Image (cartoon, rainbow, N blue to C red; front, side, top):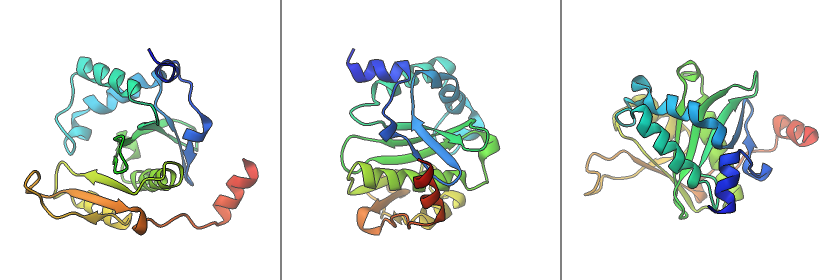
Amino acid sequence: MRTHEVAAIAGVHRVADEFETARLRMRPLDGSDAALYCQLYTTAELMRFIAPPLSMEAAQRSFEVALRNQSPRPQRWIIHGKQGGAAIGLLGLIGSGDRPEIGVMLVAPAHGRGIGSEAMQGMADHAFSAFGLQSICARQSVVDNPAVIRMMTRLGYTALPPTPERPQGGEWELPRSRWRAPEPGPAMAEAAASG
């Protein structure tokens, strides 16, 4: 086992891989996150817009694979609310090239509060700044989900035209050239002063 795999399993990660938004703190997935990961992937109501829910055994195997894929850079982060610090979801930036795929999954009480949008904007800010990516992609499983369409449009993603592989469409892209870097403001100044 490589050193980075041992670190991910043990729950050790670099502070540089953590990032925050106004209400959220993201840290790389580690070995302590199995319960949340499995809860998300086995919940039928949540998975209805993503894929069929996994069995508990399949979710546990998927978690082990996710841990092994946390290097050379993290691909999954746990989302924590700053108030109370509870883990409320999973944020992914999956792929090793310069066009990884972004995605977010939240526990039910976190839905409808703008947390998914905030986490994805924070991920784009972190990814473009820290990883030097040229583009971030997203893929909708259910292409006519109005909530996802509104979120992707609001975050600056462009819907890509249908392709022979995906004739129904549902793919989005945020190129670096369209990314809106965060403006320095009171929240960023406060974070810098406390940090």
